[in-house]
Image 1: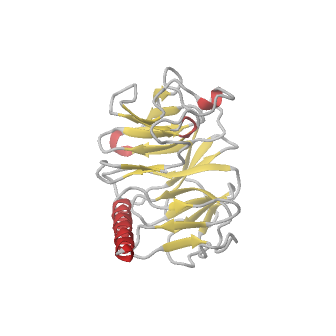
Image 2: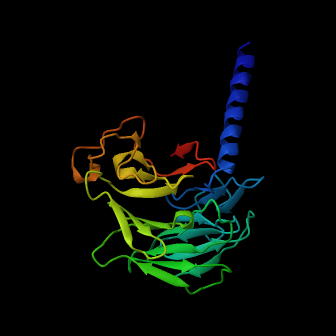
Image 3: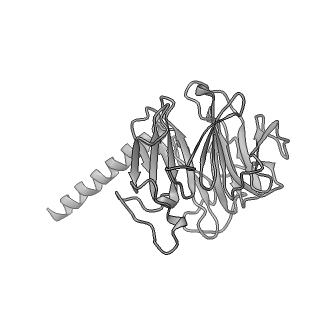
Length: 286
């Protein structure tokens, strides 16, 4: 009887895993990334079979197949390309997803912070990737077709008064909006003019190393505030968040309060990333 009970438990676990994979396959998320010391792979669950870009041996940390230390990834809107920042110094784009896929080194000169793609629920064409440069505080656009040492088609730079060690650009063409994450703020701009609409994090709402932003289905958005162990949601037109997951004290800033530690509320502690499903009914936080 004990063996039967264990078998049932394993079957239930397998069923739960299958449900999770099914949900993730229907979401906007594209890949899981491992950059732990010293090297890695990108594991992509969007395809019928498991695809590993980089080190194919899960028990090895030796760099293989052109990946050394991936730090940021983005998936094109139509699913035709995956962009990876490797070793913070090169942008590599994959257009073929097999166990021994090779990348196209689109850019290889600079100190890169982030890569992102357009987030749209209405447009499914292959939009450009935006590459954030730490040294210039600018974002450079790389549209398809991707070629080696490709020049950027356009660029957008932060105001000289803005200095940040990390930032990421997210375009929302469905609502003519552009978001830019910095060390302490999230900026909302009008996409067509780049005029600033609102800066979140410079008043009663405090951020500490916000790392990710995902768009909802109705002009809303979520921000992952890693340093404060929380995820916050803004409905369209709201100045303050209407949902807070994790640390609920929105005026608390962990990294501005040395020695105080990070209060952990509602089971979140320094979350690294998150995603949302295609119907905007569930989010996953890691």
